[in-house]
Length: 265
Image 1 (cartoon, rainbow, N blue to C red):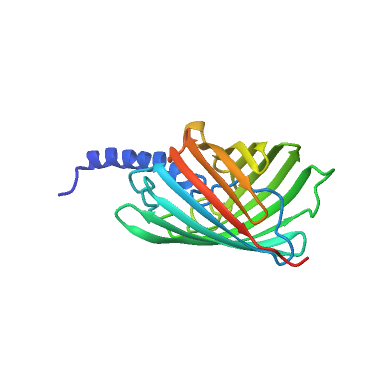
Image 2: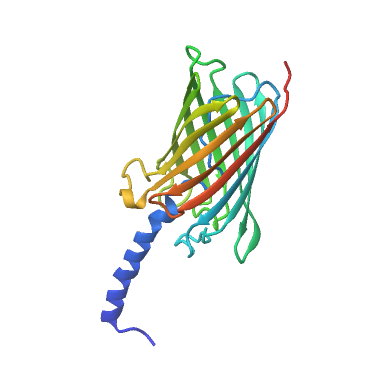
């Protein structure tokens, strides 16, 4: 049976309002496959490496988004990131993303290609500058817009035992309602060496929507992680627990294990 015209006129605005209310949470959210604040260093000439990113979303969304993305609650993400140094100032790499989704099992979750260039030496021995550029193709069940890109400027510095990095990221979707409009997703990190090769710190990840019209605070993403870093000549480890104060995923646990080989002298 068809609904009476008056009831239909009432339902349409309510349905549209519901879609608009839910859409920002699906469209503007920090990446949950690679939760990392970049430093300005690049791999040495022909030095190959591999980073393994593990993320568990302990508390996430429980219903599919209006864009077709799967619920994120209790998803487990595994991403492999091989990279190769080119010269003394550049490297190329890629991300191979997979996920274990409750009631759906193991799934392919997309691929990203990236290139990073940076100053070969730190300014005044302290400040580093670099930029990382990515293009991505992600299945719609994990990213509603599918095709996208990222430009990540990197400014970091080290002063004795203290380290800090700031990544004012711009994300540009290639498809969807906001295609071509940069979205601001900053990330930052501070850390302090407690002993040789071991540091404690905090990482922040935000997503504020289009640069032309920022989201209200309640609809943005603001994640804060407590992290531990261990470094050595051949591998490094970053692990942490994070809480999202305003975004769709509240509790997240991450670990990044990186292996770095020797390149040419």
